[in-house]
Image (cartoon, rainbow, N blue to C red; front, side, top):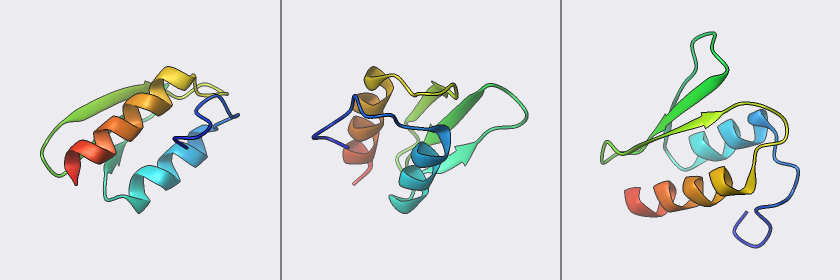
Length: 67
């Protein structure tokens, strides 16, 4: 993920990685998902294919901030 944020990340990939690292994923019938770490920080990601690299970088930062 860190090495290649420009890869073709899909919404399912993002959700899987988020859950693997202990983030809470909320998406209630909308086109956006809200990811929250253990410290309460959150990130809203538009769930369109492919996910833009800036959101992958922000996801990495959110994961690292929660550890």
